[in-house]
Image (cartoon, rainbow, N blue to C red):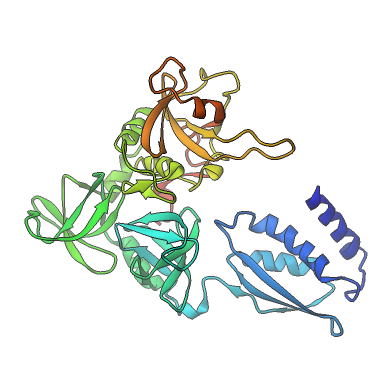
Length: 396
């Protein structure tokens, strides 16, 4: 109702051509609200951070701040046609980067945080070889980045190697391998008898410099060189062509992470939250999902669970949340993967298996009472929110 009132107010003010002197900052804020809901409703994936300074006598509205959605500014200017707009908004990526607005994750797992500080909340992670867009850099060598799923956060410069457009194109063209073991190392020598260059987790991507009898000589994004075993990695192009996952493949991958500890913001075998777990399982089967449970529940084929579990199939995503207070929307706070036979696998404390069956020794009354909805992913690959890696920014 609040948004409807804002829109009606805007129609009354702007549609009648009322003079700019009468319009107030609160009315300008109303336009800002409408534009934000249209172009940047989710702050996790878009930035529209604006400030307004109205010079009433001269009818000049100065707009400052920053955004990743320049189209929002043009739309806003049309709505505020009564003003002379002084637009000093910075379009991200920032020009101060001087072209180094491309990056590739160079740690096994890069921590992406809500603020440019190590004590700040961990919002997500990115695996080695993940391409990112660098939006800006702060004075303490932290980068604000956006990953291929659209998620935005801060990572210190040790986690990302910055590139120019030309250098990034070289990264995309180069032959690469993807690490397929759950966890391992990049070694100094092909026989893995020397020291290590880096650790690496499932899904990590490396450039290939040459191929030996037992392993690949690889180059990390920051230029370090080492070796990974052929048993632990696969040529990326070959791996992608082989990805045609079914429900059995999804469950097999999910079980590889049993016992991995829960970590808020985690998306790797070092630690996972609930949606980081589902996202990683599908990623290792060649499919990109949205980052969070509240986003994942918007995509795929809806499965009716209102009368029980008979409509569910293995590999379906299950969404959980507390019963909403009267008049409030349903919140999604947890996600897992259905395994069949009323069992599901999810990250809660650690990755484990529970059941909806009250007679089962792994029955979870708590989760059973909070089941809200389910979505089938495998029937909707390449629909919104469910993208093959082969057509994503991972590959370009």
